[in-house]
Length: 236
Image (cartoon, rainbow, N blue to C red; front, side):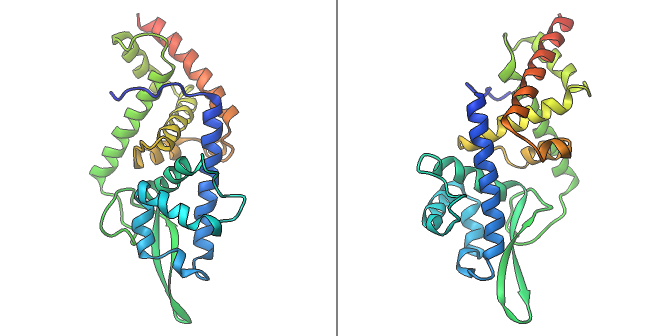
């Protein structure tokens, strides 16, 4: 198992959720203006934004052109770029469009294929073996999120309790919310875990993920922590 994320505070969750929302709105804005500003979105951009380090430089170059309400401050620039880049590593792609009345231009589309590959400008169906791999990775992320709220050693009792907790349908929505928040923090710190995070996101009830706030996440964290304590007592 991977090491748990240390020191996740409610304040950091709130900050990361805000940055992620602004990064997402930047993505939508970029796709919208691409026809009028083709130099901002092209095949080169598709390569750059998928690489978090190159994306950081690209964000700096484009900063003055972004809407003021979306621009990251100097101390936000690094995590903002990490979060922005991660959209193209998981669930979005740059796609070339051709219309009869104008030159080709590029837009940003939801990606059916969450895997990296050479055909980054095309949508592809995800192979069955890759879907299984994503499911296993998402499970791994859930276990890791449970280590963050564990108040004792990661011994046999913990792993049995964690396994039982993952199977508890009453707790599962909260576990998914907490797992997703942990991974957003990890992503903003420069350690993304790819498409499996998007799979976790898609499993969160739609009404919850459309209104995800730090308060929602923290309440989910508290319920998960309490459920884990109870599950550990039963597993002894």
